[in-house]
Image (cartoon, rainbow over all chains, first blue to last red; front, side):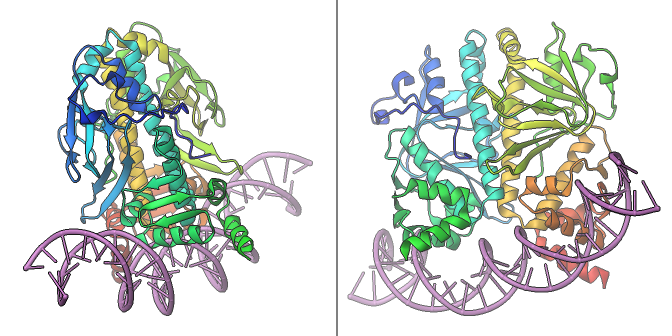
Length: 259
Length: 259
DNA sequence: GTCGCCTGTTACCGACTGTTACGCATTGTT
DNA sequence: AACAATGCGTAACAGTCGGTAACAGGCGAC
């Protein structure tokens, strides 16, 4: 399975929109399942800075100077990088609990843009503070390492998908991964509210928007999903999994089921 | 430029095959340019374990229990993962100074296989030791973070290439990245001794071996490189760069230059 | 030496994806 | 209300890449 993320399978059901309150210590802000939650929990003896973003605001820009990394507490964020010719390429789609900005430590500048797709609340964690705390709190260091490591893993899974799956397989894998992440964070795992356009999804999967569109249509025709613009309902998880593992057969099997 | 790695541009020319001696403190074993060098240098007050590998030996296997990560001191290592259907997919190609095994921290088990392509010498760095040292040596912690972060960056660059470049562009980008890494570690940046088969290269780039072969042949015909099995000489770096940036034009331009 | 195996090269064909173009629905503006 | 802008779906066409196959060269086993 390429879709397994390194996230613990413990499910956090409760969804606390704590960003609607005052800025507060983040100890109880996140569920267990989110990689950023433990880190926030381990930094207890100083107030964490909250940043509020509205749709379209940037959390950081590529090349901007690094001083903090961020734990997304509520909302949705898209990260992308812009090539020399002005083409936007989506790098990731992030929900609450995700950590952003880790890739900036090496160079001291952020490696991509991060834009809010919705109203967002973000915890800003100053890197120097982490280092300072780390010297007397090995658990915090371990937790940071785990987050790094998980990031590498999931990037690598995505890479393997990109390089080995045909268009349908990639789209199916994308949906399954999203479902798993939504589920582990207390959202519905079958009714997905995409916040991305076809274009943005495509640029993350190395496909054109028409191809994404076609894949969605095909899946709907095969009864695997229902599509209503950006509202997607997964109806046959195993079928989608089949589409990832054996893309060719899945097509055939669906066809004869329809006949 | 997607090919820029986060490695410092300082070049370490001297190549000390220190693995031929007795196991020793690693302080002087590696050049500045390698991401693993600083880490090895910062762990000074205990002897680092060396592991010798001969061609075909595994440094670690997917699923194996994690206790140490590794700094490659000499030789070449290929990492790959095996899918359910038995297909091998190359994840990375590593030279001296590279760090291996970082992705294992999250789950406690290694995420891929690592096999020696040559006689290798590897420094094994027990993770617990790092944590222990980290509490009184913040620089070590920072250095580890830098390595993690650089890993994420380079994975992401590769991802962008995979999802956006056509076959020729990927192969050209692969050659340029290799050249840059060889150069930064004291090898020739233009005469590359590939240790990978076409198949292995292809599985890293998401291409079939025939496609890799065809790309090499095309490049050779355009005068960009010379190919003699796994011995490749880069003859026109700018031309290769052009192939990455504007794959279509590069073909045309080469054709009319030949005419 | 010969055989068999592995790696690599090249050619031909077909499938898949990108390209282009058009139509439709929604949204927000004049 | 008319209009433009944006996102989305569909279809025809073209280009690229993979699948298959045949062949050459290196190498070890016998």
